Amino acid sequence: MKSWRSSDGIDWVVDVDLPGSSNAMVIFRHPDGASARLDRYNWFISNGPEARSVTSHLSKSKVLESLDDLALARLYRRSMRISRPDPLLPSVASNG
Image 1 (cartoon, rainbow, N blue to C red):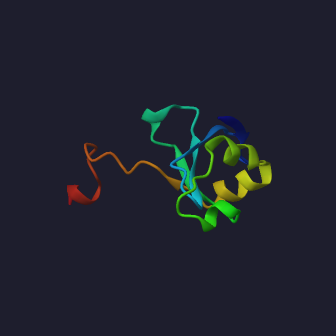
Image 2: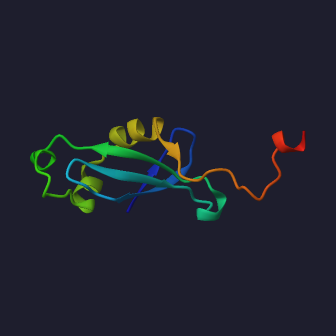
């Protein structure tokens, strides 16, 4: 894991998960914790030699080491929320 500060001043904890032969999930963990439902993710796509072999896998630690501030900013800019809205909270649409 490593820390990274976004342009809005939030200090994210960055982690890598689900490594494959050509990609890995980069997770931006919000400082408010998992229950805040503010974590985000994006996919790191590798162009290295392992990407051409279906039997190899990227190393989580090597992917994390390769991510500098510019790469993290690019990934964050197009990241998506991990969580969906809480189905137990009343929605505006269902109140009719």
